[in-house]
Length: 445
Image 1: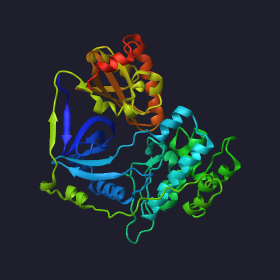
Image 2: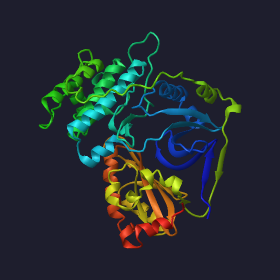
Image 3: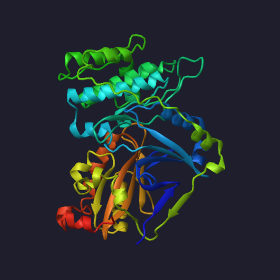
Image 4: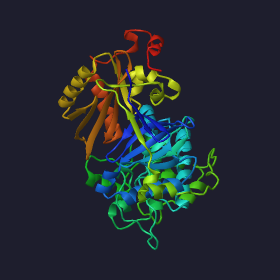
């Protein structure tokens, strides 16, 4: 049985590791160097339809400008006749948000380390005139050494010449500064600092400082900076957070003041930016100016009649170093954003059960080629969507990969737990049959 293999230029593409409204992110391998990367794929037709050319060019240019150990690296940009490919550093440790979901809250020393790395990264961005505008735990990744990496510059802004204030209201409401919500124009640096303060509160408390079920109530609390720190916060960190979460951007603690703060400086080891490199934007210009001579070729070999086979190359995205324990232990799945379970049922049976459960949960199911998308209204404002794909990992053994496509991550975790409870009859555990070591020998390595 053959498997689907897709290549884009020198990159061999594996499974999807994330997707949103305008883009899909796939795990990939550089066949020249053997290096693993993440490849963000966007359709040119979608970019043109939604008039996103300038925004995408800005995102790419920004990520090339801001090179720092605590910022996800953008390697290069490619294009085919129909798609744009952004090749990014592959960060293996998951989201900071997942760590919070797993532990409830982080210890003060661990929180301080992540906050120090976040401030270093944000200060570097600001030194380049770049403002992120969507800082939140879901956009903060962790590498294999537990170091923080800032990602997702899709909402970032570069100042226009002669214009000091930004006017676009964007970002996730719970993390957004009050002046951004007012629509009166705001300083991007001060707005980013506010978001950093909310993040510090969340990772230390395990909950948001500003949280309401209705947006008017949420905005009122944010505008008044109406929050209280938990009893376990030290006096020093309370003082720092209150200085950062000042609703007046003119008196709000600035980033250079954070760097001098007594609490902040405990065990502080500055993570210096890489030596200045010449930023070459030739590939960006080639992609958007449509030089056909620079197009990469897309080669796809398809397998018909069944779900995709998964080989060792693709398994690496499941767990660092091919440690497959998370594949078989659902207790670990709950702390992952990309959640999955294993079944011995036929793919058609799996899909039928998923669609039935989705219907009982008030979600609409759309299935095509062993890939199902569930959509519905979120329990809070906005839409909720989940993508489910089936992979064959051994003869008559299938991995069901579930990932969030839209909505809040915490809500997604609750959904996944409920989904698994309702699919208990088709979920297989390694202890029910052959030993795990024997099972691994049957896989397509």
